[in-house]
Image (cartoon, rainbow, N blue to C red; front, side, top):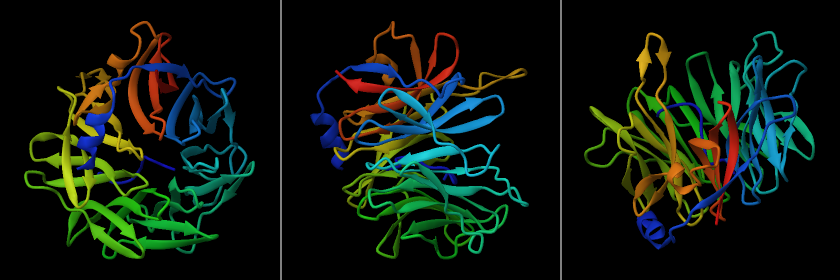
Length: 347
C-alpha cells in the first residue's frame, strides 16, 4: 500500500504515540540494482518489501527491494525510465514511466504483478498521461491523470478499468493513497474552493478543510482505520506535519529550524513518519537545504538520526514509509556521499 504521493501541495495518534515504548533502530542498507550507485525508497509493505528506484546518470530504474536484493522491474518499453511508487501486501507494485516511447512522450501508469509490467494508461480519459501513486490489497490503484499539460484529475483503476474521479470542479487534483477499505486521499485545486485535501469513499467526496489558524491542509497517506497523515500550512510560518482523525486535524509540529515539514506515511497503530526540509543554504552556487527524516513520538517529530547508532555510516534524509511492525523505509546518505534506500528495524 502506498503511503506516499506526487502531485499537489497541496486524536488517536496522541494516544498511540504516547503508548509506544521508546526504541532505537537497526539500519539495513537495501542497496541498488547491480551496476547502480544510488537508490531511493518510495513505499513499504507489511512484509518488509519496499519499492522505489535505482538511478544512473541517465534515468531511473523501477526497483523492488526484497529478501536482501534490489531487483529491477524493467520498463514498459525499451530505453524508457520507470519509477515504482507503491507496493501492496501481495507484492504488486505500481508506478509510472515519466517519458514513454510514444509520439507525445507522455507518462504512462503501470501495474507490476506476477513478474510482468502492465500498461494501465487510459489515453481516452487522460490524453496527456497518467501516474500511479497508490495501491491497496485488492489491487485497486490510484493516481493522477493529465487532462492537459496543466490540468489533471485523480483516477481510480479497478478491475481493469480506469475512472476519472475528479473531484468535481477541480482544475488540478491527485490521489496519493488508497487503503484496503477503498478510501482514497489526495489533494486538489479549484477556483471555487482553492487548495485543499480530500477523502473519497463509496463514491463520495469529503473536503477536509483546515483547522483554525491554518490556511490549508494536504493529505498524503491513509491507514487501514481511516486515519490520514499530511501537512498543515500557515501564513508566514513553515508547514507542520499533521494527522486527520475522526473529523479533526491535529498539528504534529515540525523539526526546529525546518522550512517545511510533512508526514509521508502512517501505519495501523497510528505511528507517523515524514520529512523536514531545511532552508536553502546558498543560491550562488546553489546548495539546497538538508532533509531530515522523522517519526512522531509523544505528539512531536523526532529526528531519526538520533535513534540509530552514531557510527552507522548513514545520515537519514527522508522517511517515506512505516509498516505494521514499525519498520521504517528511509533514504540515507552513506559515507561515500551516495543516497541509498535503507530499512530501520525496531530493536
